[in-house]
Amino acid sequence: MTEDTGTKPASDDGWGEARAMLDGWKGGLNICHEALDRHVIAGHGEQVALRWLGKEGERRDLTYADMASMAARFANVLAAHGLDKGDSLFAMAGRVPELYAGALGTLKAGMVFTPLFSAFGPDPIRMRMEIGGANALLTTESIYRRKIAPWRDEIKTLKLVLILGDEAPDGCVALGPAMAAASPVFETVATAPEDPALIHFTSGTTGRPKGAVHVHQAVLYHAFSGRHALDLTPGTRYWCTADPGWVTGTSYGIIAPLVNRVTMLVDEAEFDLDRWYSIVQNEKVQVWYSAPTAIRMMMRAGREAAASYDFSGLRFLASVGEPLNPEAVVWSEQVFGQPFHDNWWQTETGGIMIANRPGMEVRPGSMGKPLPGIEAGIVEREDGTLRELGTGEVGELALRPGWPSMMRAYLHEQARYDKCFVDGWYLSGDLAMRDKDGYFWFVGRADDLIKTSGHLIGPFEVESALIEHQAVAEAGVIGIPDETAGEVVKAYVTLNPGFTPSEDLEREIRGHARKKLGPAVAPREVVFRNTLPKTRSGKIMRRLLKARELGLPEGDISTLETDET
Ligand code: ATP
Ligand code: MG
Image (tube, rainbow, N blue to C red; front, side):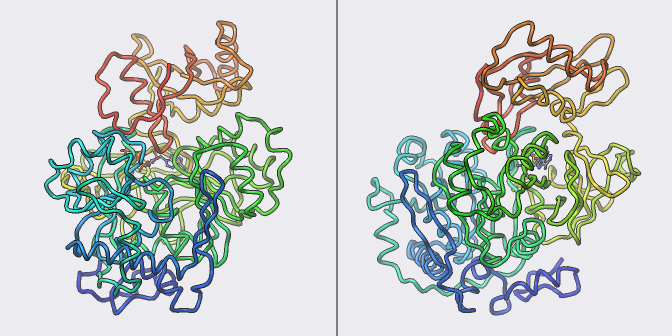
């Protein structure tokens, strides 16, 4: 890795193509410069960078020049309040243009940006702000009053609270007037490639969230992967539906699209089927990046709900966050004329690692192949060393570290970080299999693996079979202890409209699974629920289903979103 010298990284590290996509800035590297200023300097200031669709039907177009000056104003506001290079800003502000400009302005000021979900409760927010040593906060008045004001004074590091809009409670600064008064010119703080830029908290699916630290150099990989895994080219009309409160919403909801000079759509509203379909149609979305939970909601509404829309503008569809069930791939091909392309990565990797890339043959149920420059392997741990497994064998998915957007630390958790690296590999904690053609197939998280009568079962396989039943919308599968089999499979499902829970239906679903999977793998029991427990980023929290089943402590549930029995 390059030393922190303020010079461009060496050019022989394999990322030359990505580097050629960028500019570098006075010998340094700054994400905001690459995402905004560079395009303005190159004469593209008048291109629309961000088209904002408000909840109430408002619409605002912001050009690259507009965004660049908003970011500069924001950076000036931070500087005017004594904030400096290396300081940390947290943001929870919903999907409004000021959040996007604020993220980039923070980076322009050389500060570290951390997004959180606006829907987090007071405790998760506080915990993360304490861990991150927040110096500044960007939020709304309502979030501030309800969730932050009661304990704000206890966060001793916090110097500045910026409130969206024209007015602010005592002790806070209203962003509107502050931005209006600030200069639209700000000299980008010289950041070195290895200077910290972003801290992202992991989703907390498997336990207490970790704060993954990413550096400015990550932008090389955002540029590269945006181009090659998502087909982002200048002018592409792109819609990433991820909330800006987590890594997808930043890496591919802010940085990758802007660096690739697309026109990105930002919809302020939450998921609504007709609204989403109308946006894709009316805005002529070309590249659409979403997640399995959203796709399953579309599937739940049925084909008819999509029939009257024109989706002919779509060129490339991609999905991340959870395994994408084969059923969803096939369905989307029929409904949109394009399959959703699954891709795999983590908060830690900062960018897409394995993908069904444009032009590749899609194998429904597979995550695709590693991106150029990424070496992935399937390994098994053996007394402190690793053994690489061959094709067809299930083991832990591992990556050779060295790509630019890889995390550089878990904040204040050196030991937890060190444990991720063995024998020159980064261990992902996920289990997968590689087929003879080099496609990777997700099996499950290592923690979620079920061992029954000598078989190893990944929940994904069972869940995918369950949702092929016409009544089942979503499924979460766990193993529960059993005297004879070691563990047996238990499933929790939600139902499609028009179906009601009954003993007959339970038996029918079990029968369907038995036919698909065989008796050893099929669930012994199927429980109906209104929703499955999920993280704010839409991931099923199987560990919570299991803890409850076994009467164990629930552990960290700070990211829990939906949860109705
Ligand atoms: P935590 O690490 O706190 O338990 P998390 O792993 O859910 O939470 P993220 O970094 O947001 O936090 O999610 C990355 C994980 O999401 C991956 O390790 C994997 O388990 C899952 N995932 C992401 N994309 C895919 C995919 N395409 N197929 C299967 N699983 C995926
Ligand atoms: Mg994880």
